[in-house]
Structure formats: C-alpha cells, structure tokens
Length: 244
Image (tube, rainbow, N blue to C red; front, top):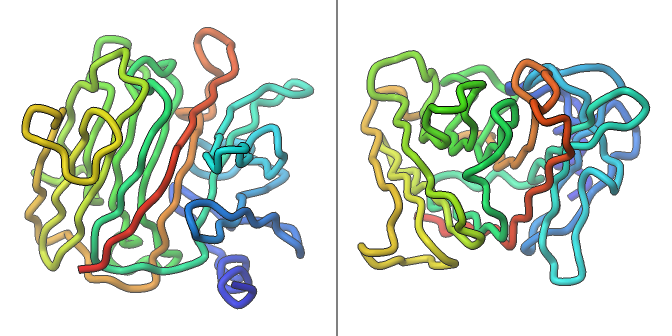
C-alpha cells in the first residue's frame, strides 16, 4: 500500500482531478476491502476547481463500514471530498452500492464514480458514471461517459427516479466496449424490472487497461456553491470489483 500511495503523490497530472495530496503523510482509509487515499489540497484544484479536504467532516467511514462524502462550508470556503483507490484494477466490473437518494442533488453538485490515470494517454483512461444536473434544474440527472465526452456516442444521459434510497451502479469495462447499468436496490445481477438504465458504449475511445485507479468524488460544478447553500452528504454502502 505504501508504494501505491507514493506513486499517487508523485503524479502531477489531474483528473478533472489534481495531485491527490500535498501532504507527506496522506490520510488513508479502508473501504470495502481496499485502501483509499483521501484527496487533500490547500488551494482550489480540479475538478471544479474546488477545495478538497481530508478532514473527517468531509470523508469518513461509519460503524457499518459505509463511506460518507460531504460538501460542507467552513470559514467561508466550501470543502469537497474525494477518495482514490491505491490499486489499479484493470478490465472488469466496477460496482457501487448507494444508501442515498442522489436523484435530487443540488444543480451545482456532482457525484462521480470513475477510473482515472495520471498518465494522459487514452484521455487518462477516464470512464464515468456521474450524477448531476450540471446547473440545469430540468435536465437529466445522470450520465454514462467514456472520455472524451464531446465525441459522438461517448455520452449517454438518463433520468434517475427520485425517492430511491438504495441503488446499484456499475460499469463493465471490456476490450473496446463499456456496459453501464443503474438498478434499484443492492443487486449485483438485477432483474430486468429492477434496471433503471443500461447502455453500452462501443467506441474507439474505450481505453485499454493501464495504470488507472477507481475513484469516487463529490464536488461543485465550476466551484459554485450549492444553489440552496446547504451541505450535501452521500453514503456509499460498498464497492465491488470483478475482473474479467
């Protein structure tokens, strides 16, 4: 784990991200059997740009082993949360279980589940499931993406229904294609009736596996404060990975 943390800290590129931490001793948490570095930076960095804090008020694990990410205002600044897995997992299924209703996030809030490499090859090997209205209160509140999102067929948007406190979101990354899925409840293999959205992106932009790592972040679009000026908290029950 120490070697992986050192590699993350040595990277100077950013994802919509930036250097994970400017601290010599980054905070590392254990979640779902993996070690995760908590992003920390004194200035504004991407995505956003935003202030990212490793404070336990922004990122913590509860008594049930669930991950909490929170956007909170302290001393005039809005602080966001991001965690970065220390392991590169490669091709396979990345599955995220939620214990939060994320359909009604403030229009300026973004929740991201994604892979990212600090090496710029293949658009940083970025594959995303994102929940946000991107400032448009009436627009879709969720999307599946293979970067670059500006290319035809690399972005697919959908509406996640409100009122669902338990959902499962996944993407299966295979050579040349990514199959995305969102479903009701905590289910690795949901029935057709429980699938909210499913879409395959078959694109030349689907990257090969490399040194990417899974990440989860909760941040503010363009660094803008929530329109309702309220703190935002999301609970992720578990993360699973199944290799191909």
